[in-house]
Length: 157
Image 1 (cartoon, rainbow, N blue to C red):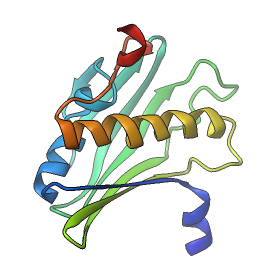
Image 2 (cartoon, helix red, strand yellow):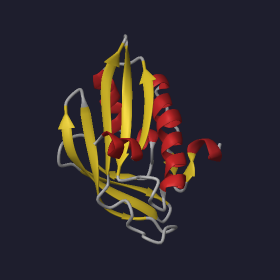
Image 3 (cartoon, rainbow, N blue to C red):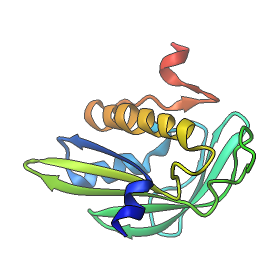
Image 4 (cartoon, rainbow, N blue to C red):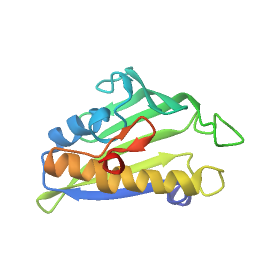
């Protein structure tokens, strides 16, 4: 199982914030990932869609362990630049938080996003930017860098 987990996309950030606030910020998808957001990402069973120009992804909150974990399961998507335009369908994005010496470590794993899939290189760069820059800034400074339309907020300024 460890080998399988290591192959999935994974990112870690460490912040000085409460675990409750972290999950609140993660669930505020429009604040750090995509301003073109429809639905709700707060509780088990919620569904939401993020849009980036022609690209869109619809998630369902498939698991919630308060103060520990939230999982977003991709139920549908359209990724027009890929041969398999539904490549993310059936994958799951998992956020886990744990206290580490007075700070909180956030681990994000996109289960199913592995080096063997077409999207991996581009999606790895995108997730790195959204997690390590935008989500980090959103939690630590209160203002993230979400995508507006098809472009990152910082690129439009």
